[in-house]
Image (cartoon, rainbow, N blue to C red; front, side, top):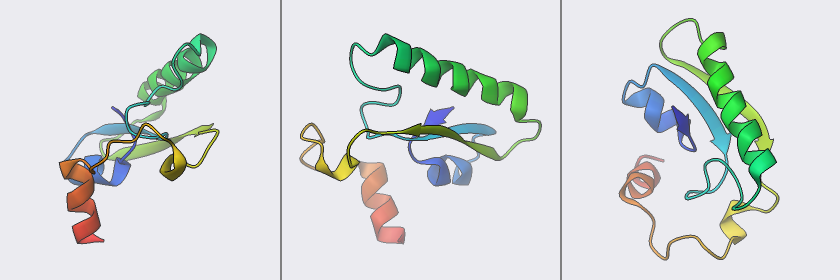
Length: 89
């Protein structure tokens, strides 16, 4: 699974996780960035070769070009998963 919240996915039992620190709504990258999206997808698929046991989280080596908190397309209200994570934090 490709996810921006690897801790949550590990907690609910997803067997193999490719973690990426991209903002919600953009798990594979910017719109129209075909090369960047392909690189993310290929790296996520490579996790299937690397992950040899359940519960593993592999952090992909990509960084978003701006601080996700500063993007102007974030939803006005956090998703239920994010609300739950803030309560636990």
